[in-house]
Length: 431
Image 1: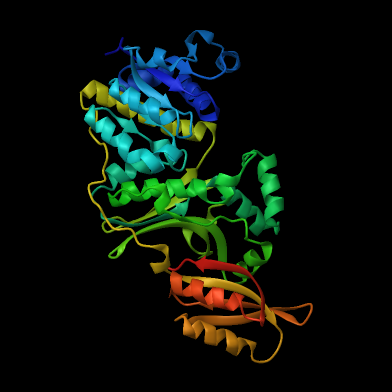
Image 2: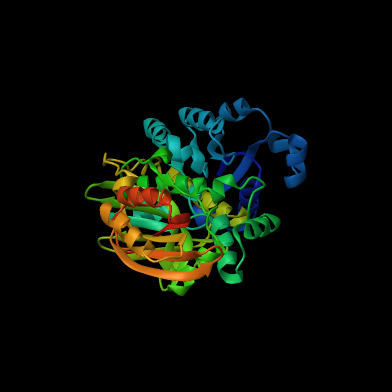
């Protein structure tokens, strides 16, 4: 096998695509020793040939014609790093139909059409690997499918978006308000020019859908995930959380419960003693609970050119080993169950509620009567400050309560004449 070369095509030469090209080049000397052959990029699909040629200094392998790649029988692996739904979905389906194996980092696509793509791969006996779609360079998809396969996974939670984690870290460590921290993240290149997918929790929601599908062996798609972003979190919320011994993190949560799968993304107060609370800046971490392994945490760089390229190249090497062993399609779709999905209003959490109310006798009694009507058990009420215009700021911590009951209580409080404003209603993580 020493003289064999396996050829691959790269779709897209953006940040991650460039990183993959670099990592494969860096591995050339040791590649044969590692996997028994060489892997060479023979075609790169781009929109702008001149711009791409300047990046890699090799115009001969650059093309703007997908058909040229699809019909090239020498290409065994297609590496899709374009992002978005179309034309990526069509290209992957056509590549699989043409007998090619596929590596992708496309979380947007997998969170919606993952089942369809994996079915197509199985139909044609091909590999479709996507380690880089979740948490960048952190190995998590392969551990869930292979290393932890002997477990019944009951919970997957984590910090799976580096941009929001950087913003919340700066708000916590330096007392910044959200807009100031976002501006810094944009300036340093952590946030995109349009940060909506990150700060509104959409990016994390797609990753949670993928993790839940793999971890619980039952298909979960993006629309099944309840999502809240971090745009309403303030420095005041973070300060009060710290006083309670907690940090605020944007968490992706997936639980396999007897009543069905829970999947949601939202900012949450988490005890500062929890391992996830120490994950700062652009790092990611995923915390998994299984019946045999108990708790396991995966930590590292969740994005970036080379960390994400590391995961992509790991998938490429895995496919090459399968090709050599004649066992492609060995581990495909693992969703052999059809578990019910629990509605968000039926989930249970503790809540941190910050209210600005009239500073007069009887207000607390009025509030507690509202909570009682909606089966919300109050664990703690603290008056934090007296504001202008005879207004007091109150923080309420609830016991575990059903989401639907809490929403109704907050809605009724919002219509009360004694409540001026409800600046924050944040869930509290409790194991």
